[in-house]
Length: 97
Image 1: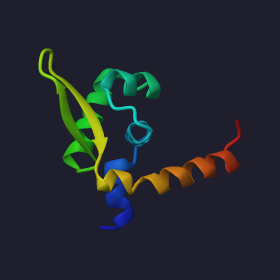
Image 2: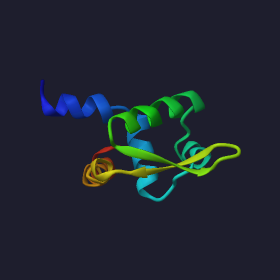
Image 3: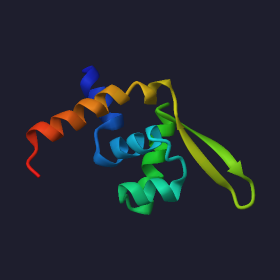
Image 4: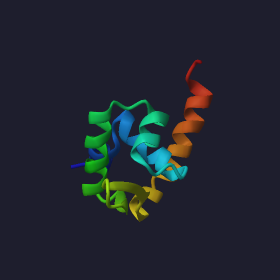
């Protein structure tokens, strides 16, 4: 299989990229990520799990009662930053507003 296809199988949808963007900006909690991306609750839950399984993010518990987690980029997640920056630049240049 192609490396691009492999990468897209993990990061190739709107929500995954927006989640990685938000966590990279320091937005670490579920409700804040949801608010900033507009992702539906179920979709956000699914994408966070998928990104964690893929090794792009890691989850850390910050409260036991009720159980609450924060999300952080792994080295793999941090490596996506230049890709997001280039997507931003491309959007600014070529996508009509």
